[in-house]
Amino acid sequence: MPAATSRLLELLELLQNRPLVTGGEIAELLGVDRRTVRRYVATLQELGIPVEGERGVGGGYRMRPGYRLPPLMVSDDEAVALVLGLSAVRRLGLDAGSDAADGALVKLHRVLPDPLRRRVEALEATLGFTRPAERGAPVAGEDVLLLADAIRRRRRVRAAYRSHAGEETSRELSPHGLVVHSGRWYLAAHDHGRDAARTFRVDRMRGITLAEGTAVPRPEGFDAVAHVSRSLASVPWRWEVEVLVELSPEEAARRLPATLAELAEADGGTLVRMRVDSLDWMASVLAGLGCGFVIRTPDELRASVEALARSLTERAAAEGS
Image (cartoon, rainbow, N blue to C red; front, top):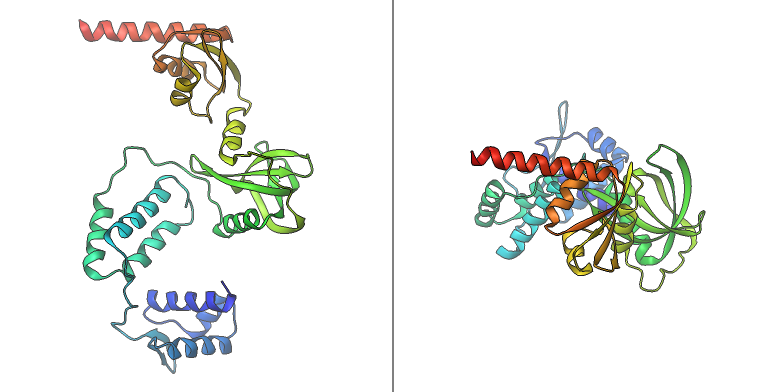
């Protein structure tokens, strides 16, 4: 969107949100001079938007009282989709720290016809989710849009990157895909410094800019979601677990997400490899699979499974007495 058009829309939003705003305040908020503010106001007036000016001390600009933008004509199904989408963004933690979803809903209310707006407000007030809200990692919308544009146009990007350990490095990347998981944005990309495919958390990237040169093409059959899932499943944790479960690979994949486990077909079932911080938690995962299993490593996992079995047995006995 051209800068002038974007600032006109920002000015329109300011005038709708405040009963009166001075030329100096507008200039500061939009990053322009007062002469440009006057030109923007004149442009809105030429478009038929009733912006009024008040001279003197305490004067400024305001929208004519009672004025509303023409209603946004959407169907009931489209309105439900918009509310569900924005509510899901908040629920998944994807607008953490920015309140972008709340701001978008406010604007949606403003331009919906009154009967539909009241029904949309009722939906927001009564809508519930079975899944608990997630704590996301804030990401600037401009960064996500820049990366998406670079992926589509096959452009390289440069950025500073902070690792989990806090190490700061400079990266030149050929971005291949954006993936959302557990309230965080991930970028699947070719890292030119390492000459390999890597996964990056977008909230740890700083100063993202387009770089010279065309991005290297994606490998044939490359799937960004599968790549990020494998990367997350292979994150080093305290324990490396290897268990043979009596499930087909297809059934194991349905019960264990790719972000959690690496699966391989094996005699007698499926070999599950996972990296975890807690063996007690791993024991509960195995119990929840509802199938037989053989622990290959580590030996300490057997003690956690036995402790869980004793706890469940004692609980069942107590409930039956």
